Amino acid sequence: MDRFLRYVKIDTQSAEDAGKWPSTEKQLVLARLLEGELKTLGATNVRISEEGIVYAMIAGNLADNAKTPTVGFIAHMDTSPAVSGANVSAIIHKNYRGGDVVLPNDKTQVITVAQNPDLKNLIGDDIITADGTTLLGSDDKSGIAELMTMIDILKQNPSIKHGNIAIAFTPDEEVGGPIDKFDIKGWGAKFAYTVDGEQLGDISNETWSARSATVTFNGRSTHPGYAKGILINSGYAAGDFLSRFTEMIPNRPETTEKREGFIHVSTATMSEETSSVKIILRNFDINGLAAQEEAVRRVLAETQKKYPAVKIAYESRLGYLNMKEVLKDYPQLTDFAIEAAGRAGVKAQLRPIRGGTDGARLTTRGLPTPNLFTGGHNFHGKLEFNSRRGLEKSTETLVHLVQIWAEKGK
Image 1: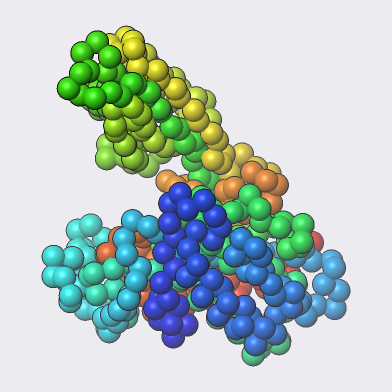
Image 2 (image 1 turned 180 degrees about the vertical axis):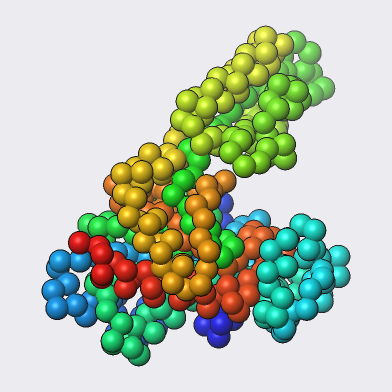
């Protein structure tokens, strides 16, 4: 837990649309710290890429390491742009006795049992929160701390047998960062895991497929005093699209759960000359994703009918595909993880992620990478928390996992 408390004090918030990687220089503060700590723990090939990715290798201690696949583990350094990660003041609520948890510096911020039923499983545990004014940074400094502690345990206990272990800490996961530039070949892992999940036991071999889209409305600006017959206000068309969107698109984030996909307007900017709307589309089924695109186009067609003078352009790109389409061919990855959790006394379950991970994009690139739990809850908000047991049991699972790969991963 000490490592975790140190790491959350470092502000590593990423930024949207920075046009560079890492998107914020402050992420490199943590990257350089981890670089030094990895070297101290005996890691080799430690380096920071131009994009801010930290790579390292932990040498195996088997009689023949080459007979066991090199397994990689990844956690991300940045925290969400949605809520401040500066001046995080972690609070340890020792020996939790039940009930709602009120955060001390903003008493309107309350972690309720009603919305967080897993609190009932944390009686007697030490719960870690922020003070109510920032997020905590459990996403994903829990994963970083757990991996660094695993490495430390392996160094201090050479009797624990393991193969070669590749380690990576990535920047900008929260903003679709430079995972496309991740050096898979140079890193050397045949299989990998992201350590970026939430509550204890959650193992994910499935994400949804993702697209992002931008709708641009082009009008014509002129002096408003002499605008008759000349001005074409693109903002009216954009506003019409947004109004129709809520009427014609029922599956939005606020109306969906579990395996239901959604279409979400994330940002909108308007002016007379040019307006734009950014949209994200998410669906567990690739055909469902295509149907969602058609639904957006139908809304745009109605807006175009009403505002024929406005030029409307729609562009979209694929972010990542549901990683289950690849991981179904490598069942040992999740089988070994479930067994490792069991050895640590954690009941594991496969749970699809209503989101994406670096691993989803790496899987699309050919490196099978499911996601493991960290013990955290309520990512991206001021009510984020983890617990001592969450950190410790997640770490124990990692230690058991590398042993299982040494035992069975031929």
